[in-house]
Length: 446
Image (tube, rainbow, N blue to C red; front, side, top):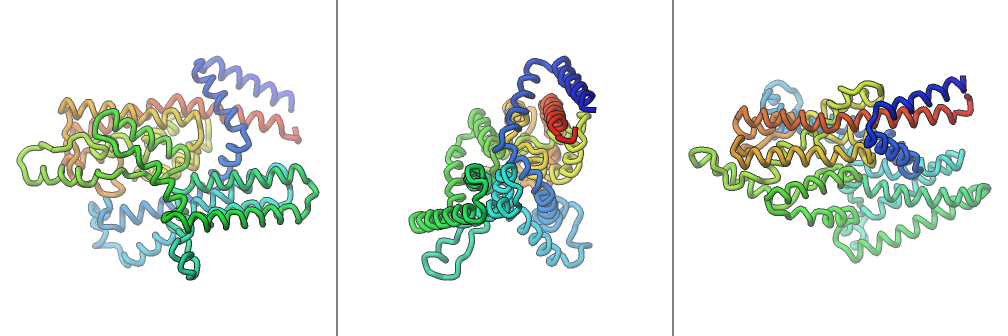
C-alpha cells in the first residue's frame, strides 16, 4: 500500500510538471514551500478554524444591512418593511450575531494562532490553551478605553478594534506569544507547570506595562494608530496612477489581514457633487467622472477587495478539489453582496503567494479597462447612490440610472477577473494535492 501511494504521488507530481507551464510549476513550488513554513501553517489552521464563525457573521451582516436597513438593496427593491414582522427585533438579533462573530475575529485569531504555534511541540492541552489565553489577554491590553483607565473607572475595552480590521494585529500577537511558548517548551520539555506559568506571567506583566504606557501617551488604540498610518497613502488625486495605487495598497493590506475596507477621505464630497450635477442639470455632465467611487468601487471590487466574485466563479469552473468548491458555494451569497471575508478566510486567500498575485492583478486590469472606457465616453460615470448589498455586476448599471453599456462593462470586468484567477486556482489545487500527498506519505500508519 505504501509503495502504491508513493507511485501515485510520483505520477501526480510528474503529471503536474507535464501539464503545467514553467511559471505554474514555479508558483506551485512557492506555494508548497510557503505552506510548509510553521508560522504560515499555524495561521492557515487558525483561519480554517474560524471560517464557520466568519461565514455566519457575514451572512448575518449581509441580511441586516441589505434586507433590514433603509440603505439596503433588498429592503428597497422588495419593500421589506411592508411584510417583515418585528423588524426592529430582527435588526437587534442579527447585529448581536454579527458582533459576537465578526466583532471578535481578532481575538479568535490571536488565540488560534498561538494555540497552533505551540501544538506541534506539546501534547498537553493545558500548554496549548495557556498560550492561546495569553495571546488574547495581551491583545486586549492594547485595545482598552483610554478614559476608563486614566479616570480610574471600571475598565472598558475598545471592542471596535477587535473585529475584521484587527485580524492582522491578532495574527502578530498570536505569533509572538506562540513562538515564545514554543521556544520554552522545546528547551525545557519537562518544565511542568512552572515554566509556562512564569512565561505567562512575564507576558501579561510586560504587555500590561506596555498597554498602560501606550494609553497614557497616545490618544488612540494601537490598532487604530495602525489603521491611521496605512491610510495616509490614500490621499491620492483622481488620476489613473492614483487609482491603481489605491487598489494595489488596499489589496495588499487585505491579503495581509486587514479585511475591512479602508476608506480614503474626500470621497463623499465628490460623490455628492456628482449626484447634484445629475439632479439639477440637463444631460450627464459630472464634475468628477473619474474617482475611486466611479471606477474602483463599482468596477473593480465585485465581491469585495480583489474582485473576489471572479475568484469564486473560477473555483467553481475548476475541478479537482472538493474543499475549494465547498468554500466557494458557502461563500457565494455573501460574495454576491460584496461581503468577501468568508472566501478570504475559508480558502484562505490571506497570505497565499499563489492566490495573492491575481488578488492584486485582477482589480488593476479592471480599473485600467474601466478608466479607458470612461475617458473615451463609452460609458457614463456613476452618479446615483448605491445601496448596500447590491450584486456587484449591477453596481454600475444602477448607479448610472440603468445604462446598458455600464452593465456590459461590468460583465466584461467580471469575465476578465475570472479568466485571470482561473490558472492560479488550477495551480493552487495542484499545490494542495501535492501537500496532501506529502501528508499521506508521512502518515505513520502507512
